[in-house]
Image 1 (cartoon, rainbow over the protein chains, first blue to last red):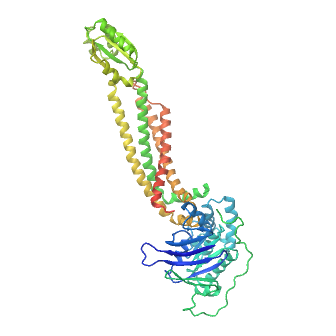
Image 2: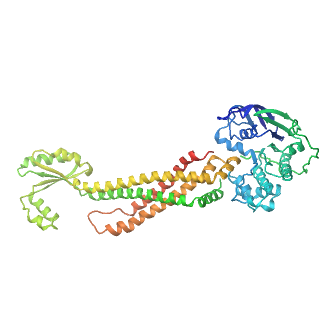
Image 3: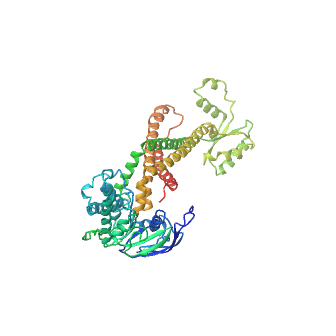
Length: 256
Length: 290
């Protein structure tokens, strides 16, 4: 699904590369944690996948497309195959929960009857069906992040990027959000989650990519947040409840 | 994007940005009203032209000692001249009669002129009265010709007057157009800032560049159309109250009719719509990264 081949990124003002010779391959349906200290290049990597930035060297392939080579007018199509969730939710404060989710479909020109049927579905899946008419500032942080996940997923992307989605949340709420992302993953979506939440990474035991100073220093299946410096508290892993897959991507493939 | 969501984006943008939009509308309205006024003045020039050209002649005054052979030669040359469609001879008595008729409103002038004082003349009707200059040059100074008078030259002050107003109106329109562009440029910048969250999310979820730009262009185009409607209303009011109300009593020449007003109003509306949308597109290049 995603191939990084010797990817480097220099920012014009940077003294050292934000990413240096990063190579990795992420298969369709994988769940990957992206870890590393602030400034290690996690966000840069996610921005490259979205074509917010272009790599200075190497090749980035997302869903079979060489990201640097697609023409500008095709970039929107790439972004429809990649959903995004952020630490700060990025909801529109003057729109209701339902309108925030519907917005993502409206602006890519989906017909109204589709929007009307898909939006309540998505809100039910994140457990916010009853708050559809609330405004974001009436919700807790965890609920706002659920809305953001519903918005990212309502277009059924093949890849979901989450940039520190639990960064503003308390541990209990973080676990709820983690379960939600795991459910998205169980439905077949490739999920890449950049995080500083060691407890979640250690509990989930998924593939871990660790960046340090722009260099990929670790690519470990079933890894922990940091084997070297963090003592691991013994705790049972919170297992995600097995769900039927209402999240399953639409059979027609990427929305386009 | 469907019309509904687009309209909702436009509406929230308008509420956020009402004062700026009002300023843009007023400026565009003045700009387009000036443009329309210039078009109407041109219509007036054409109306006068059309009305008078059929009546305008070139008059060739003959010297008192012109022989009949010289006159025959002149008339012969004129009849062969393709620029001239008709030649008519008026004797000194006929010229005097016409003079008395034309100046019947000024008895003092008529009293001072006798039947022998005015020269006999050949009156020429031209194929194209606008091309009278060549005819004047051709016949001036020929044997038996005292002077060649182009009646159209008498109208030059009127034409200069109308032309000056036309140029003035178009100049004002151009100045206002520059002001409109500056305002639209600023409106787009403020609007892009006010809508930055929406824009960021649209980019993120894969809205096309056209969909991201559409609300801005719509915002500006609506302002252009409203400004155009105001300008069209001003033109109609000017025709109804100023032209028809104040100037109809003079009978020297006819005034432009309603068709000219409708044509100008339509031109002004279309110009408002297209120019404001185009200005917005230019401003967007600067203020919106897609």
